[in-house]
Image (tube, rainbow, N blue to C red):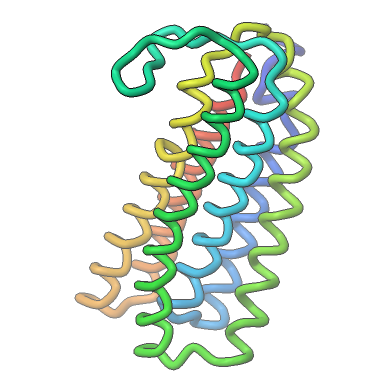
Length: 206
């Protein structure tokens, strides 16, 4: 018997995320995007995920600090801890992506990423921005049902979500350089999509 309240049924943001990834895969295959273009698009997606997580932390009303420590010291839930956690996260996450962006810039120069590629990157980023904006406002109601969410888990979850995504893409392009086959690109982008969907489900499950 199907549960009408199942997240798989009700979470339209999951299907929009799926559609966004599939649309990106199709365009990448048809237009034969280079490595720099695809990595920049998913770098933008990661930044978007981090931004909304920052907003999510700031919006917490009640939260738990169980198993969450600062300088190896246990802390109690408070407004000061919430703001400290939010801004520490955005600085750490932002620095991680800043370093990542330097490598991507070097790669873009090596692969001759041009103006037309920038339009593609911004378009792809826009698709994921719309998806994650919709997901944020849809799922925020469900998130508020749990009044004791762990602030530590919320802080670290984006790392858990994006690392499988990017490792999958990077390994995919290692194989792509070795075999130079378009189906290798599509295969690993599909694996990236699966990782993205699974982590979205884990994050927003009731």
